[in-house]
Image 1 (tube, rainbow, N blue to C red):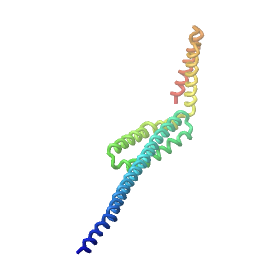
Image 2 (image 1 turned 90 degrees about the vertical axis):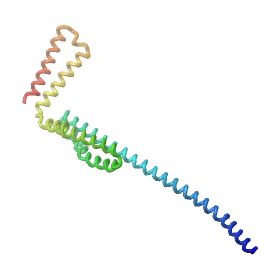
Image 3 (image 1 turned 180 degrees about the horizontal axis):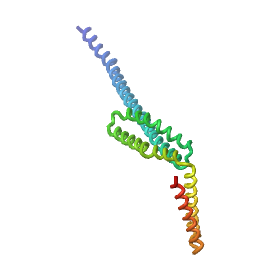
Image 4 (image 1 turned 180 degrees about the vertical axis):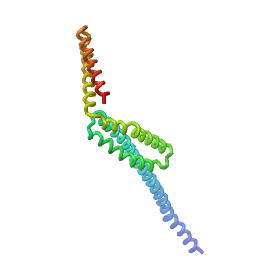
Length: 192
């Protein structure tokens, strides 16, 4: 009987000596594991958010490139200005699809993205493409008339800034001549 008590006490001590540290190690390991999972989850969220911001910035860049290319071509008629416009117009749908997949779980962001897409598409079809088409149709003679108009207008503004228009009769005469040049330039631009 005494042996049995000693062996059962030995077992209890052995369980306490080995079991408690094992239990503590298990608890510490579990805490580290869950903390690591939480950190990895946070890192994935951060990377996802960063990727989302980069994609959104790409969308903004495309809008700016399209608008700048359209405006540059409308003002100058030089075809190289259309490259950014055309590249942005081609890239737009893919970037929007990518963002829609990323926003799949966020209806508010999806709605914003849909509105942006609708507005850009409306701008393309109602403003940019008609302006580009009209500019392509504009004969070179009209562009010369517009340049003449612009030159006459700048000359008039320059004289006004320099104060030369304040010199009585000579200034009036010069102003009339510049206004006449402006009228001729406008008439030339309006005549087919």
